Amino acid sequence: MCLKKNCPLSNLGNSDGICCSCERKKPQNHKGAHKSYRDFIVRTNIDLIVIAFFIAWLHADTVRASETSTMAVDGGSGERESDIDSLEVEAGHDAAEEEIETAYAVLFPWFIEIIGVFVYYALSRWCHQIPFTAIMFLIGFCIGFCVDRVKPRNILLESSYIWTNIEGELIILIFLPGLLYLDSFNIDIHLFLQSFLQLVVFAFPMVLGGTALTALVAYYIFPYGWSFDLCMTFGSILSATDPVAVAVLLNELGAPPRLKMHISGESLMNDGSAVVFYTIFSSRFFYEFGLDGIGEEIGWGKGFALFFRLAFGGAAIGLAFGIGTVFILFHLDRRLSGEDSVIQVVTTISAAYLSFFTSEILAHCSGIIAVLFCGVTVKAFGETLLNNLQLTHHFWEITEHLLNALLFALGGSVWGEIIGDQTYTEGQGRLFARQDWG
Image 1 (cartoon, helix red, strand yellow):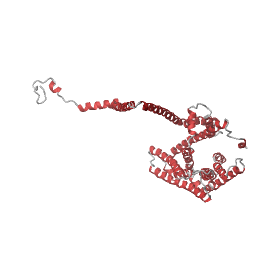
Image 2: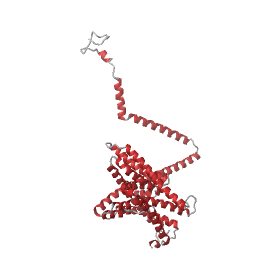
Image 3: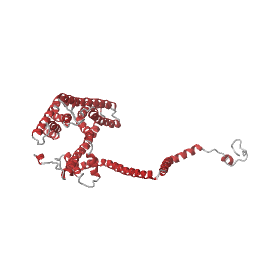
């Protein structure tokens, strides 16, 4: 007996109580079937395959239409088209070669860094007295010396050639902010403020005095007949001192902290002042050529105005970026969030590079002084806001090591390429004459 209502076979039901006809009329779950089909399509990526075939069909149709229109052109235009096609093929090959050579630029910096690992291991174990940067300079010199003497060039020499031909302004934008920020951030703020007036005297009037003395030596003793503006430019290049050896000696002798602050703080500020003096005197020297748009005649009044604009403008920009960085660090001060700590480090490196770019390129002020004051401001007001101070220090130490190794190797490579240039050694004159050695 069928248990379904209105079934004509209700009196002849099967053993289960439901007749066969009712069983056949049982509705199916079409929603579940559609879902299984969709899952199958997604799982097998049929939708992507269909889209890919559709795009390929459209592309083939476009190519076929272009070939049809090309065949309809007469013989003379056909020859012209073949010439154009051959030129396009050659241009494509040249573009591919240029793209490959551009990709080679990635090799040189990371090859230098891995070589630097082995150099550090050897020096730290067996030769403590030899400076790491000096060895990196010699390695770069050997690479640069082979650039014009090894034919054909291998990939490493091609990569070195690309790096040595980068514009100097771009090199400054890449290296200086990362190298200056850590030194300015590690300054003892209390001693820096106590010694600030002495540091200003050391970094500006005394650097100008050193520039003038070096210029007098070059003007009266060197046998080149340089103009005085060129001698002052030369003196400004040599006036910035590197206090690394002196700082090590002071630490070994137990010198008072304020004396060490005078040495390290002056070394930071004299980099900016030397660049300011170089900008002024190099403009005067270039003006001697008499070419339009090159150099500028700078008198005493204009020179002092330019000096104050470069120095104090860079300091103001650095303070502005430092205050902005402290404001961002304040809103990222969640010590239980590891991601906030990472973003704080990203904020510091972004502020360093943006302050340098804004001051040096956009405002035409001193980017070095801007980074210095940015780092000092963050040190004074933002150090307590850093969630993980150790992470910040380690990141900047890694950045400084990478940039130092690459910078000295790049400098050696440039010098080696100059020395190894065969145009100077094969018939067109010597790079160094007897008078260069005294």
